[in-house]
Length: 267
Image: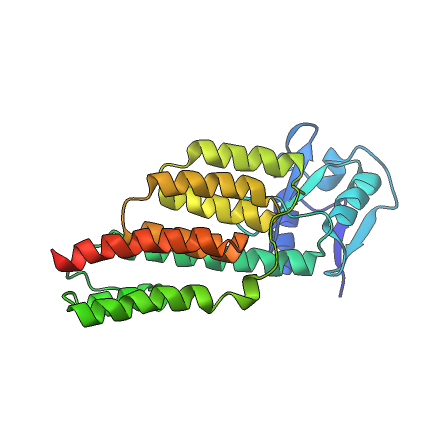
């Protein structure tokens, strides 16, 4: 069944129904400002079209935005579920939602890993935090004091992390920027608001995911200069490997994590 927009529906109701149906955020404008959510589409529309518009999940983001403007004379933008970024025009509503869910899951993972990283010795993790904890961190939690042999085994984990991803990262992931002006604006604002290595790593991941590997690389370089502990460096290395496919750089960052880890367990 198609999702429909009519002139009688309120802006607030339309946005709620759109989010429920497609898992995405519909930004509705009245001129250059956000539309009054208590008004109806009929009250803010600038054109008199056929009156209704049917929307399906296989419709592309850019196509829908154009159709709403053609039909109602209303500018809209389609953003992710949490309204933190704009969806690419070439994606269908269904694929934009799927991509958004992956982004949210990645954010949640890093959020919980940050909570674990900042916890004090003896801290009891929640089930969710334990689920997101990396295997080597679990090992550290269970064996806070390691001997030389155990530490060498930990070093092998680092090598396996790299070699295990070599095949899936053997393609050059650098590419020219495909970001829209709105995406560039949002990412720049987020960069200004970022406070620590965690914030910048998440931002760089999002920029890389959006298609600008060169910009992401510059942010990762900044993260490397800001990183303070083992988890900071390990998360950075994982991101570099996953998003840029740069095995040599990732290995160097892993080694920094290893060196800090060695200091921690030998104190």
